Image 1 (cartoon, rainbow, N blue to C red):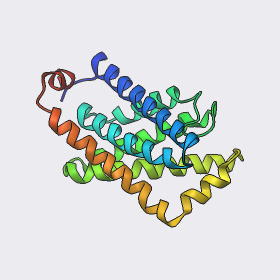
Image 2: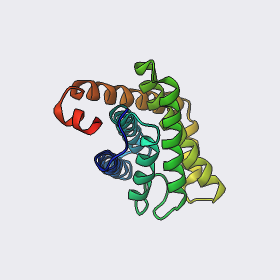
Image 3: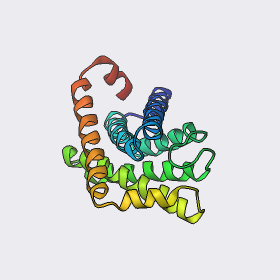
Image 4: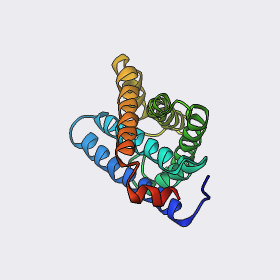
Length: 186
């Protein structure tokens, strides 16, 4: 198995930054159109990019690093909680760590692993944001709790994350034999 190198770390950072951009779009959509719709967008892209990171790097810690960098990127933004909420770093890093554990445990069945990662990341992030929001009485958390516990939300949000994970798998599968992927994995 290949070792950690600067290329792998830069790719992880790039995926985290790309995830932050997609999450900004989700936050804008949620603030402009429908409350909670940004969560669907974010869940899809989080699932897709975390899965892609795990499949590309194939090392324990890749998703943890991505979650850490992502949470630093969104610290000043209304993503993973209110702007400046320092617990975002714990939420993002812990999400990445759990994704790494899921990937290590399930990687023999790649298809199952990517769907569980997609579903799991949404649940983990939701629990982290809601839990820390309730713990610190973040403004607007009561509405987020109501939205999260709405029966349709309990099915749709994890399903969207699972679809995002599957799309990340398909994306990786289509790029697997390209020279850039082989260089990153070397």
